[in-house]
Image (tube, rainbow, N blue to C red; front, side):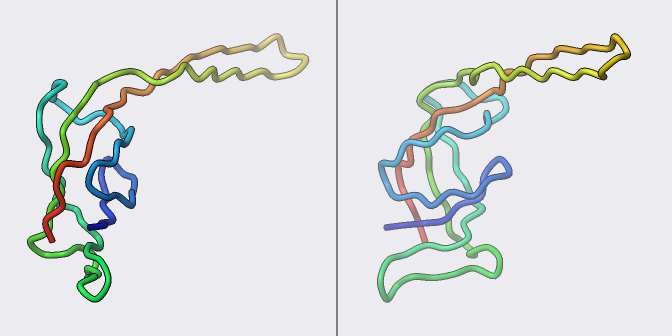
Length: 104
């Protein structure tokens, strides 16, 4: 079964067994289970349903495999001929999740 979910400000098209990298779920640890209730569409073939905007009663269960930090992104700002330079770095907090079940 396929589904389109919205989580952490992003949309993903998923099937059971998919592994995704999303923004970190707050207050969770590796091995815990998360239920995502923002399902935009779900089903397959003739049983495919589209929500307006969300499907009522639909949910996706995912297991958190790992919490990690992404690669460092360097932000460098400079104003020419002014002697102004600013260098900042950022590492995004991420969760690796595996889709366990889709309930439409």
